[in-house]
Image (tube, rainbow, N blue to C red; front, side):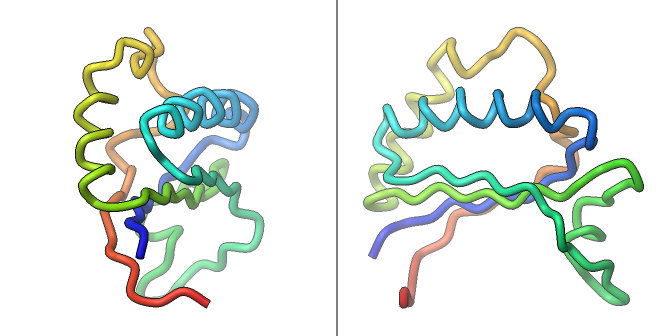
Length: 116
């Protein structure tokens, strides 16, 4: 089975176009280094939780939306090698701050155990 990197973050609604442009640029780099798919989703039906939720996890503010993203890789080994190369690639640095608060970015790597 493939390997998956997953991400959630909060993005100011006014930065939707900037985030989309950023995601397309960075997504292309991930694919160049071996990613199978790169998906970025803009939340439009993300309920508030009482105990836990996506919105609570990223401390979403009233003027923000939750972003849910994932990258699929052929294997963890390909992913680990790609991340090393990506971090050294000068194209990963846009020269300006990303269009989201990186301190509220939640991410992790996941082994796939089922796919329907």
